[in-house]
Image (cartoon, rainbow over all chains, first blue to last red; front, side, top):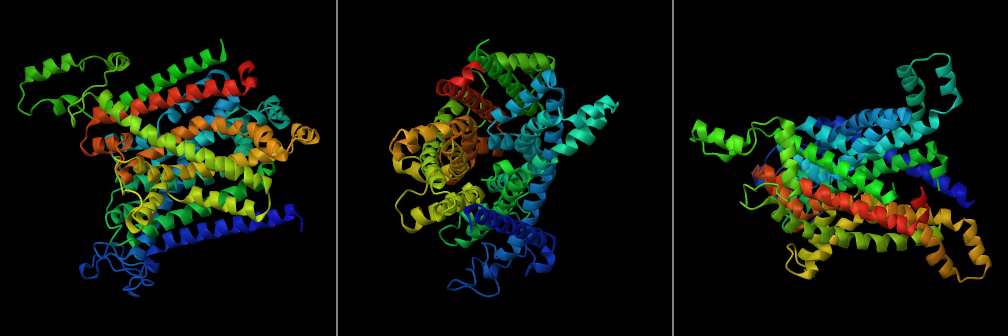
Length: 283
Length: 304
């Protein structure tokens, strides 16, 4: 087999692995109450800091062990997937709406509109994002929606840049010129011809933005900013486990693996998607 | 206008936007008078302080005042430390920069080495292993990696200190942790850049001239493959400073991240605002420097 087709097949296998991870994560989040062995917040002070089942001193009752309050780590991991996936996808979607609109306007109209939007982009990028998120959530208040909006601020720039570049090539195509010539209005041209032909890069950016949002949300929860820490989330679990690193390594270890696996799945899917939609990038 | 004048002008515009956005968010935190005076202060005392701070002026005038003070290095007083915000932030910022720059240096060395190797041994197990490493590097949360490194090197093996900044060796773990994502991102960039450049005509010419393969790869090809890396360097540094905020929390590193977290929990808004503003300012300055560097390296930019 030649190197090319070899790599091509491996590429497909890797993409399918990514999809499998995403599907599994979504299924776990949706069916959490059915899968979890016990409720995520059920405290059992007689079973504090129990090691995982596969370690000496562990019990089969708590497969990944328990935390300092005797809560089951496996159950919390299962419920924690809900926050990660919900925030990740919502932020990527909101970022897609804002960023695509900005990118289309900047690319299509050019001139002053373009200058104004690229100024917005530059201002956004000038803030160290984690610090900006702490600032916004700390001054304006936290909560699920606040975190989604703040994370969308981090991702819209990615979309705006990619979409703008795509629009620049699309807007001079014959079918756009033809549409204009037969009198199709501007809003309709933008939606029906420009946006419709810019969806491929938007989908690719969406996958990477979801991964970025999941990582950042976990970091914010880890810092105790944003989402209410009493709601089980992977970031907050890591924060809980920090103090018990010496006595109970499993509390912080498993949520980190859960985040890494989920993000890996989304990234693998994103890479595969990009190679499929944009053959130039497939190397 | 020359390229750099244009860039400078743009940087000033960006700073205006940054300061205005920060000012408006801080405005919405409520009545600063309520935080500054005692609960039993008289109506007159409140009014006097209000006009002294210019809070009875229209918002735009207040922003002008804020900007005027900021330009003169006055971002107010921290409630928490009872010190000038600029002094506090400047003090901590150097620590954050030390951490971010160390991580950047590690990321550059590792990513160039691995990226070039992956490109040279393209489609072999070397390439596959390096690609797998970068995929994992991009997916692992940096703060988790930090905790795991502490667990292994500081708790189990006890070869480096757990946290703090007293010894030089306490920089090692945080810098490695922070460099991980950058290494992975830049490695992918170097790999694809090298693959493209190695197929270019001038490389064939260099080989045809009979140059050593080592020289062709590491001098002729790498120089050109590094251009996209330089383009990304400014953004990458910004990202490192942003991620450093989280890493500082794990390693008790006394940088701006810990300052900001402390400011949030004690609702010290002037300090929080100052932290954000000063770091954004530094980021803009760094990018100006990168622009300057870029046009030194690539003459094509100057004429563009």
